[in-house]
Image (cartoon, rainbow, N blue to C red):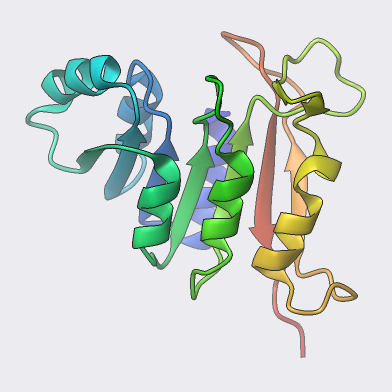
Length: 180
């Protein structure tokens, strides 16, 4: 994932990454070495407090305690990459996170972790209420974010084909270049 993040950051001049679901903070630390500003949100008091101590003194990490959807509704960033990874409890905020992003003025790069990668059953993914985290699950929300006319596809996407560590799938979504 790191190489794809670095490619997207370079290609799009990304300055800010918004991470939902800080968990233990390992990914946050890696992201902080890549960009000027990382905003990470964590719902769990336990994880938030552990991370607060770990992040102290790291000036480009801004840790927020709370619901990821509330954070995404309250900001309107420019030149951002959003890493959606806040989905492992009873409530799955993914679709609500995408709805919040659809109200932003500028359309970000979106990366969703724990996503079903076609033809790669070795890569793990999440499900919610019987629905796999696959393209069909998020398709309507992507059109709401990137396209005002559903007949015009104004985004592109790709998947990871390999994963280290937890061996989880991911989808990388970006606005399509404007053509005149």
